[in-house]
Length: 193
Image (cartoon, rainbow, N blue to C red):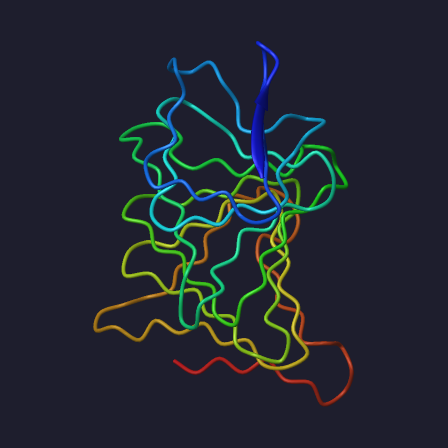
């Protein structure tokens, strides 16, 4: 084991580990790097916080970037402290074929104000489970056309006291409101009031 220097670089040559008993600090702030694009460290093991003292990013130049909470019952928390405007931005590349894919047993999104989804088309699918849209306030759907298809029953229920269901159309020509229960003999449109 030995240490060599050529006036520019210092080399520490050891057949085992190099153990540092104090802090490892650069001689000047915000100048020196750990590793380089052509001389990269393989794995980095840390305990404690990983803190940027300025704006920064985590980039992979080859392959996927995976952030994983590996311990049992641990979670990944992404938190933005912006008080107005965009706090967390997920950019999946705006190319038409790019996808942001979220896989979960349960997806729970809570907002204290309005939730807005802007898209050319939106598809909500619950597979063999239940798709439940619930609000204690007003649920407003604005669309040039609304198409609800199901292989089973569709139930719209205003269960509260003095609640009502209002379906309003501003159509001025042709069918303003159309109920089609399949023209086959035996099909029934049942309205109980």
